[in-house]
Image (cartoon, rainbow, N blue to C red; front, top):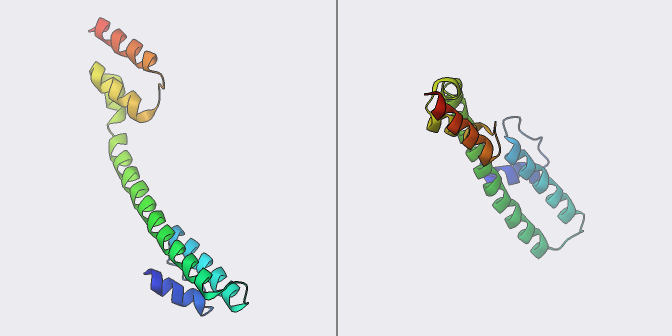
Length: 122
């Protein structure tokens, strides 16, 4: 749904559409409050316009953040099928890659110990 469509619904007192994602819901509620405050004469037109622009910009940021998160989770799901193999059967570099991605070992020394130990066992 576009920002202007959300704005129109929020400004006319329509119920929040169920298909809105989290970022759009936040924008809808922000716009509803903005319209309410303006109608109640709690802010002037310039302040309302400025806040509307800010809400629109934040919606863009939030949507980008959601898309980035969803993309990262898609990649994580694909990689998760390989990680047990990387950890258990991979070369030292593969194991280090596994530890870096998973956060399983958080210190560089832990990863070096694992890598050195694996090389000694080969």
